[in-house]
Image (cartoon, rainbow, N blue to C red; front, side, top):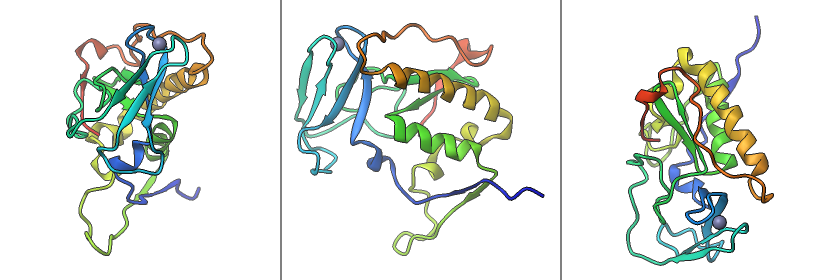
Length: 186
Ligand SMILES: [Zn+2]
């Protein structure tokens, strides 16, 4: 019998995935990046900058509040409120990720045949990690093929992000019922 593909939950939360957020540039609709002005300042409200190397757009964010990380509907950047670059209709929902690492964690979770939770010495078994708070449809076996297909599509967007040739187009759904798509919360 094959050994299971394990996914150990390392208890990273959504806050650990905010170093860089890939977005659709509001000016040229190519890939732009939202990052912290001070890379080592991991405060949720640390000032940020949106930079598009394609058209030269730069915007700075320095506010006292952001859109909720848990109510991202439709999937927008929490700071500048522009659509995420990595977003695609899938299985009657919308699959989205902030960046490549975020996408790869979701891929590992979906691919795994054994998902392991870990006990936090401070918070016990509370569902605070990114993967333990993924919406249910992400973890359903019946959606695995559709989700992996959608992830593969998003990876092709990653490969073109930053080379000046990519421009976002309306996305074809990975399932035939995506016209009824709605986004869920990660
Ligand atoms: Zn631009």
